[in-house]
Structure formats: C-alpha cells, structure tokens
Length: 335
Image (tube, rainbow, N blue to C red; front, side):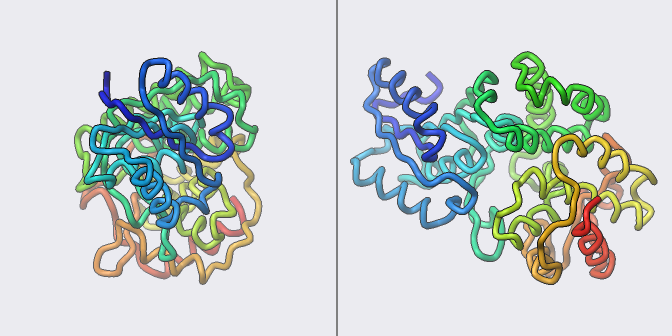
C-alpha cells in the first residue's frame, strides 16, 4: 500500500462527498479500514483556516492517531485543503489524493502544494507536502458541469505555454473531445500535463527556481480571484492572467509579438472573454502579496515564446508598477 494505515479520514466537500466520497469510504471499509468521513461546504470560500481547523478538530475528536491517513476526494479546493490538514495533523500523516475535476487532475493534486486562502490573498498559508499517490479516473469527469470541465483545462494550456508548444496545440485541437469528457482523450491530455508538471517539480520541489514557471498567469490571476472574493473561477482568472502577462512581456520586448494573441486563441473555447466586474485598484492591492514578490516589488513569469519561459536573469522578472497597472486595467475589459 502507498499509505499503510488502520484508520482513514476521507475528506470531501458536500457536493462530491455524496457522489464519490462515500463510495471511496465504502471501498476502504471493505478492505478492512476504519473510516471517518468528513465534509465541508463546497467552493473556494471554504478553503480557509476556519475549515482547516474544523476538519483537524474533527479528526482529533474521532481519536485518529499518527497511524492514520487522509484521503482527499474532490476538486482543487479539496486537494489543497485536505493536503494541508494532512501536512499539519500531528506534524504530518500520509495523504492520497483522488481528484475528481479536470483542474485537480491536471494541476492541483500534483506537486505537493497545499494550503488555504487568507484575507491578504490566495494560498498564502500552506505547506509543500507531496501525496503518497494520486488516483485519477477520467470517467468521473462526465459528472462535472461544462463550465468546470472547460475551465480546468486552462492549466493544460498553461503547461504547453511554458514548456511544450506541441502540447498546447494538441489541447486546442482536442477541445471538442475534452469538453465532451471523452475518457481516452481526457486521459491523454491529463497524462501529458502531469508529466510536464512532474518534470518541473522533480527538479525544484520547493520552488526556489524553475518551479516558479508554473505560476505563469497566476500573479494577475490570483489578484483577480481575490479582488472578486472568488466569484471568478480559478480557470477563468488564470486565463485572463496569462493573456495579460503575455502582453506585459510583449510590452517589455521580452516576449515574441503575437504570443498573447496565440494564447487568447487557445483559451477562447475554454472560458468567457468579456469584461470582469472587478475593481482595478482593489485588484492591485493583491499583486504585492504575491508569493513571488521580493522587497515589496511584484515579479512575473514572462514567456520568451510559446513553449519557452524567458530566464536570462532568473525565472521571474520585476515589472514596473505602471506597466503592471496598465496590463491589469486592460485585461479587466476582456481580451
């Protein structure tokens, strides 16, 4: 077994829990495990210290000891939250992730980033804590609504943009099958994205260098999410962020002209492109809280071209306040 344990805490949200969390729990019981099922309200608003504490307290109340394991069943919010519970419970117990969304399969469950959101910004409290295993079954994607299915694929476009142009092209060509949740097509795209991310994480597990490239589009994307109080989906926010940050690179002469337009073309079938109901000045307050900031100065991952990140002076680039402000203001009107 990847995580030998007599007692298991299955953590899921109140939407995925009835669909798959209970089934996972029943299978574990059939295998001889003592299982405690814990749920929390679905949605990004629950990925906070309050629910981290509540889940931890429930595990303590149930008497789970250091010989237990956590199984996270759900989307990106669940994998992040359950991972952080496991990383901190009794100074860490094993976790197995069972992602049930495209976003979680492609990105959130892989790489060991766990954490919660705080008033100052997204994912600012957390830990690097790798799962013992990730078990993904693409057949469950048929139960996702079309919006969640499509927005989760934004991260696959990002993986191609930063590392593999052919993968981005493949994702674009596969959109009809991906949106229809064709199991074979989804498995192929997800496997390639996971390989790309795994290669990066294997070289830089704790984000001291190369792994920073996985944050392309996320500096502005996270600021948009936080400023909108998470009413904007992660995929849509990152799509806007990637186009905006490619425009920043083009404005600075770092990114090849036309790169932002190519990204917009690849992302168009996956998310809405219209105006965002977000206050620009409020969004700017979250840029300085980004984890890549140094000395209070905002830094961005910038592309050289599709498939290659610019890294002549490190994997991130300090960008002047005016340039960042203009890009943020412009993207709020759509792309």
